[in-house]
Each structure stands twice: as structure tokens, then as C-alpha cells.
Image (cartoon, helix red, strand yellow):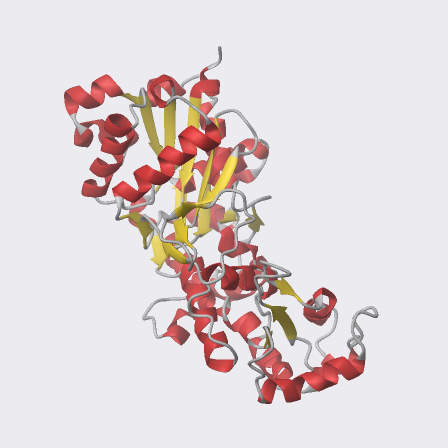
Length: 435
């Protein structure tokens, strides 16, 4: 039996858990790292099928701002995952677990207790997400610069925060890591506030607004131009689109009313002149329907189970590039990357700028990489190339790197065993992971 078949790879994110067996290409399960409670229920339930009605559901998460704060809740979620979803026996398996950068020793001890004392895993290896992303990309392109130089800059825009992490020989350079305290959760909360202020109250609809953000938001390549277009009325406004809320009877999931209309902004890539853009949505909407919408916008009809979005679509992801607009005293992503690179040895600078890897769910916004390159280019010396690579699946990238590591022949030797943990304790065992 190969070692990877009994290694469980667990990417324990603040938003999603990705779990499966080492050596496989994709995880067996991708589930939210939370419990939810419908309004009509007193029980907290696990999210597994994806068909649940999540309207006005309350949410409990074991992680806050990226770090574990409720080990008991995490134990309950893991227990359901291992027993009902993965159907594994922890005492006969090793565990490769991801852990955020700069995790406090007290949290590390809580995690070790969960792994060895609650679940009785026979061995544990703890990895940092940037190292696994680097490993995945270096293996995918063995002849590329990233693989030859063994050096990259991983930009991880996740659920809780965004890190720019230089990686050298598969280890993050902790002294050079720079962080923005802004991730997918903060963007969802900001969109909730905008929609609640302008149309209908959705402050309790976390899951629905998450769906709105993922389906309709995009990164603007020219904010001033797009703001002026968003002020226009009728068919000249290329950003206006309608999202229909679930009614609990005919549909339990929200949806975009006119998908073709929602994609009209993509035509701005071909031309910066809005007047030259197509205004028909392939017959799905006619101009009279579009023309009626500005009036609907002015007087919100509360009997309608839908709302319109215009400039919210690009103002929400804009926060990653301009956190100051949310009142945060932090640099934007481009400046964050430059600061991370400048903290490294000058010999690494040209290689890092040429090996930027984007991972994490918040990098999935359309035009994200293009906007980042436009912002980065003026800040980087002219004789350096800037090359940005987005992972083929930014959400699964860390897990796939972990799966590769778990299937390597040296993996078992890198782990801390249960007997070592019992003999030496958490703090001394952790030194093996170079934390």
C-alpha cells in the first residue's frame, strides 16, 4: 500500500474546508467550515448537499479572522467530515493540515490536541498554504523560472485576509510576508451594507449575498470611467443587472435575472467608448425593459423579491486595491506586494516579480490579474518583468499542493507521530515544521 492512500489532506480554511486523500488530483469534499441554523429550527446543521434553503440562516464559524477561536465547534465539524463524508478511520491515517501564517502557539496547541487526543491520528504534518501553492506550481511547470529558481511570490486572497508571501526553497520568508486584513468575508459584509442601504435589507442573508458577489462582482480596469457609466440611465448603463431573491416556494436559491445583461460590461475591454457598445442582450431583453429600470431604481418596490446592482458590482472588489476607502489604514494589494518584495534580498527581486502566483477565492473576480498588473507596473523598476499567474483553480490550489506533498516518498519522515507528541509535547514537535 502506498503511503499517500492513508494520508488525509485537510485544507482548513476560514470559509471552506477542502478534504481528501493524498495523491488524488481533487479533494473528495469541499464544504463550508461552519454550521447553519434555519429560522424555523433550533438545531445547528452541517452544510453538505448544497441544496439547503439558506434564507435568513444563522451561521456559526470556528475560525475568526483566519484563526481558530472555537476548537469545540471545529471538532464537531471535523467529526462529521471524517465519519460521514470521507468515511475514514483517523487512528489508521496520517493528517496533512494547513495552518495560517503567524498562528499563535496557544492555537497550535489546541489544534494538536484535536488531532492527537480527540481524533487519535497516528501522525501529523502542518504546512503553510504559500509553500503548498509554490510546490504545486513548480511541479506543474518543471522547466519554468519558478521551478528553476525555487522562488515565487504567492498572493493568497482568501476568506479572512490577503497575504503576499515570498517563498524560497518551499519555505515562506516570514519576515517578508505582508498582510491586508481584508478577504472574502469583509467584501461580502460590505456588499450586504450597500444593498441594504440602497434597496432591500439583506443584512442576515450571508449565503445569498455570497452568491451575488461570486456571480456579479468584477474588478474595474478604469474606476472613474466605470463610475460615470454607472450613473447613466437606461440602456447606456452597462452595469445594471437584477438579482432575484429566493421565495422559498418556487425556488430556494437566488439567481441572476438576465445573465446576458449581467455580462455586457465585458464589451468595455474592446472599446472604452460606451456609446459604441452593444446594448441588446442577444434577444433576452429588449430596450424597453432596460429603459424601465432606472425608474424602478428610484422607487424601490418592496413587494418585488429582487434588487438591482450597478456600481456595487465593481466597488466591492475595489476594496482589495483601495482598503483606505473602507476606512482601513492599510496599503492596497499592489503596494503590499512591493513591500513584501523589498523586504527580501535584492538578488531575489527580479525573480519574485516574474513569479507572482494568485490563489484564493477572492482572486476569481473577472479582470483581477489584469488590474493588479496595471497597478503593479508603475511601482516596479523598468528593467524588471512583471508576470502574474492565476492558478487553474485558486480555491483548490493549496489542497492540490498538499496532495502532492502527501504522495512524496519522504512524507512519513517529515511527520510528527502520536508517540512523539505524547513524549515531547506540542511546542517541541512544532519545531520540526520550521515554524
